[in-house]
Image (cartoon, rainbow, N blue to C red; front, side, top):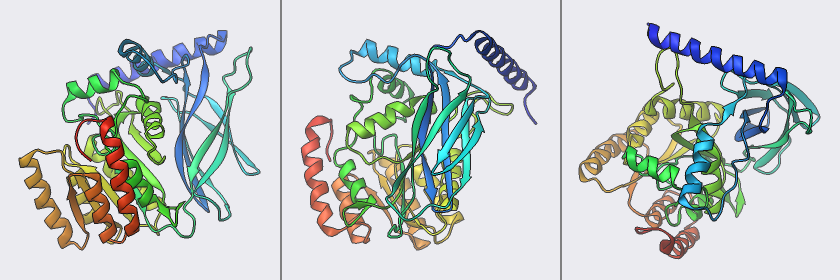
Length: 374
């Protein structure tokens, strides 16, 4: 049963947000209306596009920032104002449809399509119809999404925190420091991870297998994550984060395990003909989440990789889980370095053998940029 206090809190929050939105609409009190599209998923007959309409000042500046400037930049991201009930026009090919944002400013469009074979990455155009700013044209953005070509063999589903990007997610204080004191150009990734993910995503040197990144971090960090992947030359992909806030049942709308399992289920359902390669780390619950995915969706998981963060007790637990996963017919590898991960992926036929050396060389080249080993 919903908590009465939380239900009242939700009602109050919604009422304030809607009142502020109505005032802004009436008097045109906007700072900088814009559409933030999140990389989406597609297939020839269907496209799923998720994004958000926000009203905040330009917060995409990255580069040579001091720590204080990074703090200010990230604080502005967390304090950005969503725009509920905004109207948008989404154009895909010759077809245009309208969509409206929800109470949190999100739009979520599941669109029937008829797409020909082509490259992995495709584009739609999203234009804000209402609200409008009198002194500037309607914001219009390109919304990119992945449509696996016929040669795709699997979908890569990877955790972000401490699997790709160094975060320290198990230590909340360290996590907050890393997030707030850095920006997209100063966040660190594990050496060689970009080369390994390119090898997993490509077939014959061409991007073919779709990539999905999962994190329990809030959506406010989307631009920081995507900017970090781009700056560190890690392949782009759909990024699914969490909507933090109050809800009639809970303060945070879903837990870490439930959030990731739900996203994995959505990805497997969206790509029914593609198995998943799951990559995570031993610091949180990735091993348990992937174990449940293997059990719940027989035949849908091709392999599991878990990066070992170095806790001996946790390592023993991951090894126990690996034995259960292997008993279900799915290879699960606990790896300590990216080069080791590439070697295991080649042994399983997921990447070409010659790609292992490229990963090893990339890891050695990047090792000087971060602490630790490849």
